[in-house]
Amino acid sequence: MAVGLLIVGDELLSGKRPDKHLPKVIELLDARGISLEWAHFAGDDELQIAELIRSARARGDVLLSCGGIGGTPDDRTRQAAARAFDVPIARHPEALAIIERQYGDKAWPNRVLMADFPLGAGLIPNPINNIAGFHVGNCYFVPGFPEMAWPMLEWVLDERLQALHNAEPPVEFTFRAYGSGGEGDLIDLMEATLSAYPPIKLASLPFRGTPERERHIEFGIKGPKADAEAATRWFRERLLARGDIRIEDLRLP
Image (cartoon, rainbow, N blue to C red; front, side, top):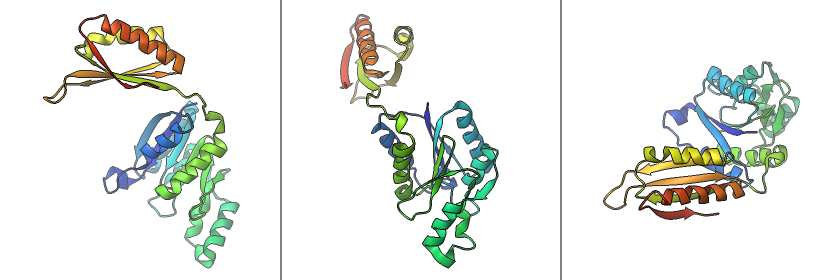
């Protein structure tokens, strides 16, 4: 089951605010042995957000979504989620009670809008101001404020997604190869490695060279430890056999 991230907000796409969620979510997932498989940024566009949610749902992915669940007119994630799941928006009784306890008479008429979720949604507790996020199916929606979003996502990962925790997560071996020519000269070797070790992923990142650093290619081989270790050894042996090549190790688990 792949895990994806949706980050919502016009302010991110306009550059008014920098994104902080992507690196933090990767960190939270990594601490639990989970890989982030994809990420999307979207503006506050209900149809676009709904399509992204619908696509994740169709694939059976877990979706973590940050932003756009407030009650102001520009926040459209709640409505988009309802659209993606083909259910109406409904006022959640427990979420409403939380808002009324938090704000008293000032909860009405506007703050109560934050209790309107897709029909049948469950709540995600908010330890900062108690205003809940929500989840529908395998999709989890939290505010865009990092101080709220991150502890709420930790709750999701530890209370709702424990089955995805991996005590033996994939490992990655990375190294630089100097004198190996260009990437195009090594496509056959990379394809042969992937064929020989189907569980692994192989990435290459060329560096064209500067006066300070020699031209090289940085390789990453990632997968289950035994497979990644064997594939790295297999790839390196055949790479070195091609000529006057020097290898610099960067990360060995």
